[in-house]
Image (tube, rainbow, N blue to C red; front, side, top):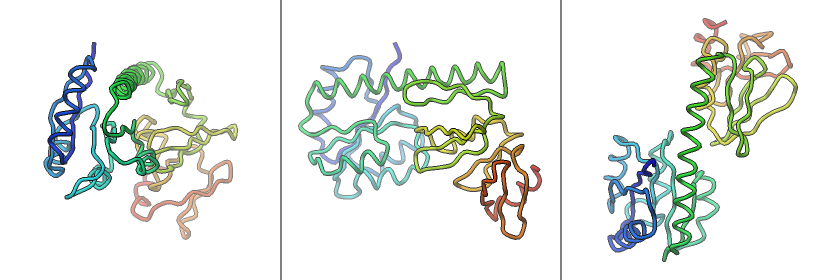
Length: 242
């Protein structure tokens, strides 16, 4: 059984001890790697290590939980907010948090959250393995997680991909689109380098679908007549690509 590795961040030592006790007594297959009352120490640790999840207090005197996450534009770890206040739920959702636990923590709620984290970790491993298998057999096919299932797409059918914060929209040649809970950078990393290029922070395009490049305006026009901006700092590399 794969061990779920987590860290706890809370400015109150008592709250940390309480959560550690709950985890030790009610949750199997979980290892608390470290605990922190100082958010700066936690940031330093997270930049050098890769836990599966961070249990994070919201209201802390030196730096709140959301400010701590601002130090990680690219997050590999899941986040579970732990707080005595329920008014942060919407903001937690926008931060793409895995869950939101209210103090004092209910044991059943904690167990439910841990099971959700384990399932997410298992699905991520399955997805990575599938993606690797697909790559080894067919460089033109990728697996995309959509609403609890994997959708297999021929990359030649992708017109362009568009960023929407922590989400991404994949526009297909048949005028359909897929909205997925992955950042544009993650999707870009699994697309063939020879055929796709990130022309802008918000767009990755299929180079085979480019019909025109408006050099003066700094735009490309795709076969579907979609007009996509090309960032000034990516213009030279883009021209080399095409």
